[in-house]
Image (cartoon, rainbow, N blue to C red):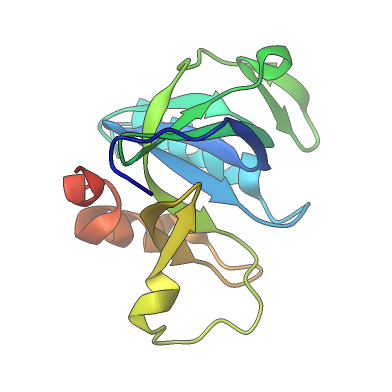
Amino acid sequence: MDSASQSIPQTIHASAVLVGARAVLVRGPSGSGKSSFVLVLLQAARSGALPFARLIADDRAIVSAANGRLIVRPPEALKGLIEARGLGILRYPYEPAAVAGCVVDLGVPDLERMPPRAGRETAIAGVRLARLAVAPGGDPLPLFRSFLDRACLQASNDP
């Protein structure tokens, strides 16, 4: 995609949370723990384990490419809402838009112990992003903290 081009917004099956200055897209099959992981990130920020986290979208996110960056927004009907299994629908402060820094894919079957470089990146709307794959039933938080330090929210996808 040309660095000055823009894409038509599309809705994807993903949750999103702003961590620091970049959004983290959380994808995975139904029941893989996307909303739970977003809640864990929000709690980690409240406890000081992360510098900042704010909900962007739960379950569905609107994404579009603009000038080589992936912009993430919540759908109008779901702004500020997150479904917590066993608790129901919760209301949280939310961010209306953010630039994505990385993708966390939950519930990835047959995950390699040492994934090749190609498996550590993904493209959405033509924008390449760092990717963390997590096996089904795996605890994504410890992996994410290491990933965060190494690649996720660095400005590597800035043009």
